[in-house]
Length: 427
Image 1: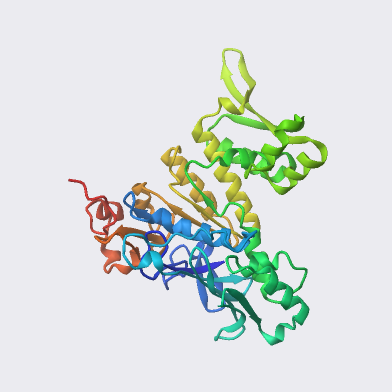
Image 2 (image 1 turned 90 degrees about the vertical axis):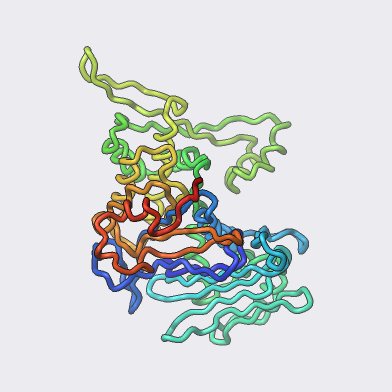
């Protein structure tokens, strides 16, 4: 589980800014929405409000960048890392960006830190809390353009393995990416690596992502997922009574193979199939719709192209949530209300919040009626806001930063009246 993320000099976050899943002492809705790990109380959900271009999506982009950086293998030392510093200042474009993630794997607390620019990783550290004080597992620095990696002596990594890790770890890639290429077991470090690996594929869902296609690939091989989706479709009043998925092999012309190998949307498994067999695997899905008409109850099969954007997005989001619940993972969704009816948004969130486990969901939204659900659907400490200052930098703050919250009868009206900020300055 994630406790907090601190970012500095990344996109619209100029100064050091911390987002936290740590719960207050409030006991509201504690049974399913707060997870106690030792002395730390962690939230399973958070939502962020803010005007357009205020930086709320950039918070999600920080999580996405960090996960992408961890597992991005570089082929050459001059390949750009891809980090984007704050650009509305004379100094910051030439300064490094920094990220600090505090998280739990099981009951063990970790802290990961990295300082980098688009060319170099200057510092990378991984610590764990065997006691109340952190112990440094990994300390990676930069010396004359070469990565210098030091591991805690108790990890007992051989000199040969450490040399191979140093050789693989180019100055523009993460230690985790290098570790993925070396066959060596590193206690405690492996636990953090495997935790990150379970949620690396779709850590953020953006409004224009084709999440339906990615979700559809999982249906033929997972009956539990199919049942989960059918229950969602039934309760959401989509009139869908069954999902029929079939995987077919499609022969490819020889002149198309090279182009497909460059397609970033293909998985390694799909690329291997293209190279070895000259075929592609495609999933075809039909949705069985049940209707009541003059003939009574009838069922008709409709192809994917007949579905609305909202149905497809709901299908994709619920698939991602299903995977997150099963892996006790982390998922972020930008503008969750995009293409979805407000009541469907509330239904999706309610289903997640009522589930047990250690999964976490972070969303951004403009849908302010959710603020009327504070203390009924979710807690006060789950609400965050973003506001952009005159210097163009984002300020991130929590609802619990405000005093007198127990005297407020409608958080939505308070927000609409500008009492929490984070609204567009129109006129």
